[in-house]
Image (cartoon, rainbow, N blue to C red; front, side, top):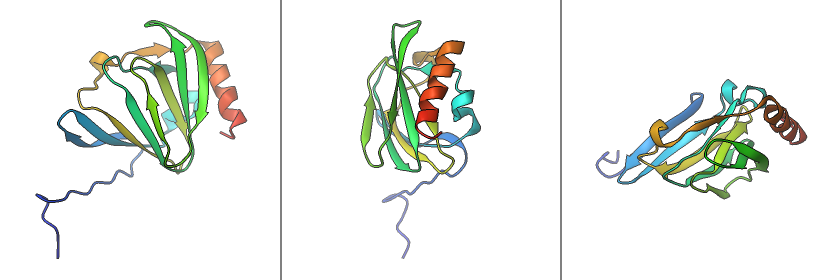
Amino acid sequence: MTIPETLLEAFTHTDAGYRPLVDFGAWRVAILNYSQDLRPENLTAMQRHNATDEVFVLLQGRCILFVGQGDHASISAIYAQPMRPQTIYNVKQSVWHTHTLSPDAKVLVVENRDTTYANSPFCPLTAIQRKILCKMAGEQGF
């Protein structure tokens, strides 16, 4: 017997990149899959969310979560956190971040529903920062 959608919904996302799957009340659940723009050598900026924290959970594959320390307009230090499966990583409000994923990776993302480009600016990485980020990724086998 099929369960009516008024009782239960099921969603998947198998294409490349980010896709919101559930928006409800004040929150959103999305999946982030591997895409070419998330390869270490293709990362050119970090993003931050001025109005919310953002939660990431590695479901499969490998992912490095990069966080940047800095002010509203610049990044002064970059840290690399290899994600462990089924561990919750909460990137705090206004912290610069980006990630690189293995081709088989799937990451669950939970954020405020009103997270938009209007309240989530990007900061370009310098050439030196891009080299540092690629070196950190290489040290983790990416």
